[in-house]
Each structure stands twice: as structure tokens, then as C-alpha cells.
Length: 411
Image (spheres, rainbow, N blue to C red):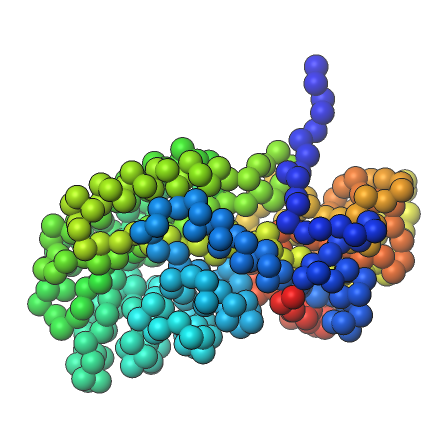
């Protein structure tokens, strides 16, 4: 019987020079000196650009590409992406202000999320941002605020579909959800939109995230476009935009493999033709965050101590779950699995061993790698967590135990 354990997918986005990881054409050991110390996050400008180029090459020409800023809202990253994508999707007023500081037009910024406050809606309307409506109450409040400002707000209705994205790491649609308006309630809501002074741009239908299953994504895209076509019949004006969300996953754990992007693109080509037949003024937008930036980022920390406890080796570092909650397994994992972790200045190493990499926090949850085969390392060596460009820095409890914050750099 084959007892071979699955391995991480080959990760080739960063070159290796003299057994040292290179990012932004800078060897990691030198980058540490440039940053001034550890821990830190580094994002590769070239890797982000190459991912957008790959998407443009694989997707139909008419499909719009939006960046979901919640994946990584670092201003320098957003500024870089503003020149590469067609739109930016935000989920807070703080993110909206970052987007508005870029050269992208306010009309290409969309604001989603339940529970938007009145002053946030007022700011968005004044800026000319597209508002994704999450409820009938929010829609009426938007109309009231637009009237008081003398501005006709642009809106898209966020729809909670009657299906979900199968095999999704996080389901955002289907069943009872706090997001959007239930699909069966849309006909009545669209009639009300027609009576209000609102400019209806289209629909936002987001059913799930972090998916590597091509057939599941294709099925969700098919159902999403069919739903949009069906509901557009109740709209009082022509639909211009159908944001079908994202959901494109990246491989994090052993046994996972990269998404077959060409297969997704071919299916979207078919759906684009179908949409053109029924809604000739409408364009499809893909809202991607993790897929654009996730593989372009690394988290770097330094080994403070090599410790042996009852036969098990621990590498204790100056980083941990307070900086990278996802890698610790405490950000949605049911069963903890290791992110791809390497010794950045000894990527292959002369000797390999099985170790656990832990942080300095006084909790057994502070684990960056558990019993992982890795190059033999000791005090001063650099631990690198790959696949760290999305949901790392801002999705972690940085105030926990009041350790210093990590730095972020775009190189």
C-alpha cells in the first residue's frame, strides 16, 4: 500500500540564487537589511503584474477584471494594481478612501458589505462610487441621501442566490445569509428601484471563495449568468454590469494543485456569448483578490532559538499567529494543515529535518509549521511563509500580547 504523503504544489513564482530566495530581484538576506529587520511582509510587484497578465491572456477579452481590496489593502499594492485592473471592489469606507487615492475613476470603485452606516453611504454617493445594495432598507436610505445631496446614486443590487459555490473554502451565497437580497425577493425590489431616483447599473452575485474545483466554478458561473438574465427582465433599465464575484483559489496545502485557468476562461467565453444574446448592454466582471495577490507575497521572520523538547525540534521565531493568523491554522481551518514554509536563506539546504516552527506568544496556538520537513536551520536563519500575499497582515490579531507590528514592503 502506498503510504506516500501528499506534498505542496511546486512553487516557482520566486527565483532562488545561491540557495537564497529572491524577491523583487533582491536576495532575501539583503532585503532584510533594507527593511531593517524582521518580521515583515514582502509583496512582489513583478509577480502581481504577471498574474494580471495571465488572467488577461486566459479570460475572454470582454470580461472586466476587478481587484477585491480586502485581500490586501496595502496602499502601495492598490496603487500598483490600479493601473492594471478595470475596477476596485471595497468593503469599508477605509478601503474606499485608499481606492479613491489611486488614478482609477470613482465610478469604477464599488462598495459592498452589510451594515453600511449613513455617513459611509453619504461619502460614497458624494464620491460617485458604485454602491452594492445589500437590503431594501439600504436601498431606500441611498435614495434619500442622494436626493438630499442632489446626486443620483449609482447602484448594483447584491443578490443572495439560491445556490452556493460547491467545494468553496468560504460560502458567501445560498441559504440564509446576511449578504445581499434573496434572489426570490428581487422582482419586487427591482420594481421599487424603478420608482426611486437611482441609476441601476447591474447585479453583484458572489457565491463563494478559495475554490480549486474547475467544474464547481463553471457551474456557479453558469447559474449566476442564468440568474442575472432571468432577473434582468424585471429591471426598468438596461443592465450594464454583472459582477459574478471571484472564488478562484490558490494552492496552500499538501495535495492541492493550481487552478486550471484556461478551462475557466473557455467556459466564460461561452457565457459571454450567451449574455450578449440576452443582455446586449451587459458586461461580466470578475472580482478577484486572493488569486491576484496571494502567491505574490511572503512573510519573513527570524529564528531566535533552536529548542529540543522530548525528541521534537522547535524553531522559535520573532513572528507568529499575531502577524499571520491564517498560517497558524486559526483562520477557518477545521483540521490544521501546513502552509508552504521554507528557510529563506537555505531553501534546499545541505541537510533536511522535521521540525515545528513556532512564534514567541504564550499560547500553544502559535504554530507556523507543525512537524514539517525543512532545511536544517538555527538561530539567525530566516523562516519564510509562502502564499502570504492575501489575508495575512490585516486579517491577523496584531494587538494580541502587544508585540511589535510587522512591516510591509512592495518590491
